[in-house]
Image (cartoon, rainbow, N blue to C red; front, side):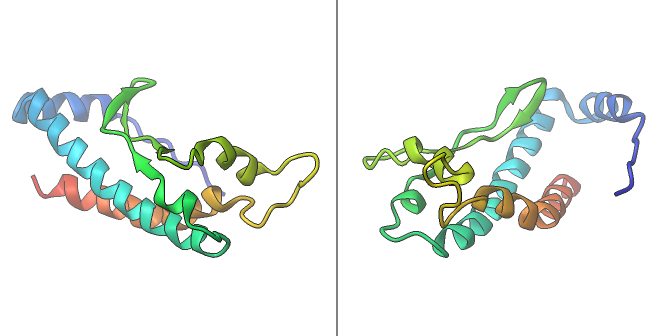
Length: 130
């Protein structure tokens, strides 16, 4: 795997904010993140449908609104709903001592890897529209 170093991004962001305004740039980034989240959700649904029996985990997939997290704009995926699937998502993703290899082990990581290029393409296209 090759490492790529990109320099000048802070200057680029500062120039874009100067031209379009900070609020307008944040709105563009937020819209791009929402479109990217939809791409990730589609891939996540594909992975979860392979093992989900009652669709509880699928039905409770939700995304946060865009927010600042760790100095970057981001959207977080979480599980929220009546069935309380958030309690078992971590166990299903990584396994347990008693069940080290559940049916859905690694589903979120696979979805992330599979959606990476499409996600980047959508973000690039959305930010290029302005």
